[in-house]
Amino acid sequence: MNHEVKSAARTLELIEYLARCAEPVSLKQIVAELGYPKSSAHGLAQTLVSRGYAIQDSSERYLLIHGHRQSAAARASEARLLAVAHPVMEALRDRSGETVLLSVRAGDGSIKRLGKCVSRQPEHYDIDLDRPAESYCTAMGRVLLAHWEPAAIEGYLARARLVAYTPFTVTDPVRLREIFAQVREEGVAVNDQEFVPGASGIAAPVHDGAGQVTAALNLGTPVARFHSRREEIVGAVKRAAAEVNRRLGHLRRVVS
Image 1 (cartoon, one colour):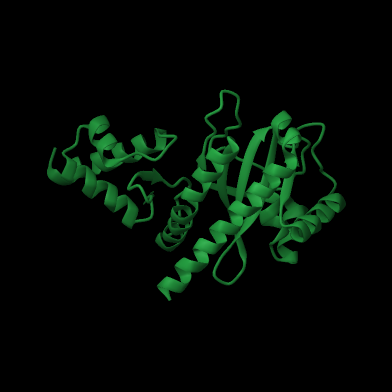
Image 2 (cartoon, rainbow, N blue to C red):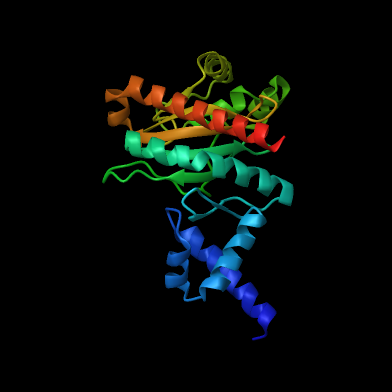
């Protein structure tokens, strides 16, 4: 095996390893798991970061970005977003005890999850980042749809197959438009057992430099814990999203 092929194989092995990790991992963990020389492991990990396939957090741990089959510019933008949001996500997970996710909207209105911080409680909400999820009946999707252009929202509702995943799923387009208006007014979306039985989701918007909503921060929890802590959880999600927006705004000022 020549040097170029060996490097390619190691890069793929590193991507596969990071994809299996539920939490960010240190360079020391990478070296111990894959057996690479430290210098080689560092070079490969930094290459993934520079190309937008992974981020390195404030503790110098590495985290793979999911759903990266796109242009380099889009990968870089989403890498910056996740790098800024991830410490806030971890803090929200630790304070609330619940799972936290970050998603963006794809061109067709569907949800594209970038990362998650999974609850450490024995009973908790979790979902595969690559699993399809409907926007109309999830909290993240409703945030992203509610803040889309009106014509785009109507186009989505016209082509979407509005299926009732549970007895609680709202499938009436008129009612969904009312829900979207409520999300814009209240600054938060709630999904109470509409997509996954026994699970609730609460999401708030994340803004880009132009003030447009391009992402959603979501907390997922078993429904019983949500009902007993609703006001607390909704407030925590809104504050966390506001903190991400603040950090993104500070980053934009520094860069400009």
